[in-house]
Image (cartoon, rainbow, N blue to C red; front, side, top):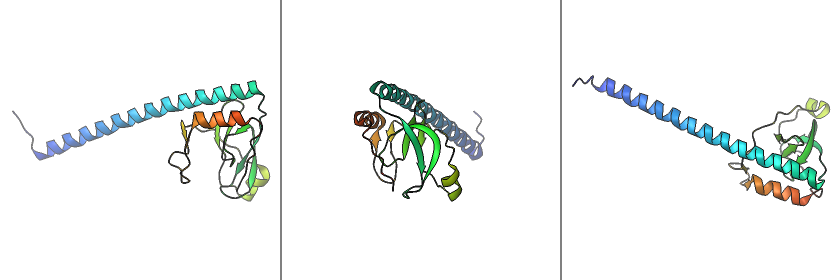
Length: 152
């Protein structure tokens, strides 16, 4: 039996750790993809139900953190949180609406990109407020057009 000594053992150990880390990364990525797909299905269901119930979509504005400053986005849909931080457009895209807004953006507006929706909204956030996406969507539907948004 041939043994190449401590260097070979260390290289072997390092290779096994790399392989294990890669496998774990792959598992996490697959789990995130499944979660995102489920969240997208929930949002598409929300959009269909909002249309069915006649819940009126409106313009979605971006806002600057805790400040009252806002900017036009060109997006139309529904705010999901009363602080105006999250929105869903009529095509089912999910948007984070809070962002830095320099003066130019406040005047000319901003272009936002949709983001992957989570199944747990606010998880890991600083404010400690976390809610399941399905519960948030149900609350929003139940409120109908009575969903005032309070910024800042």
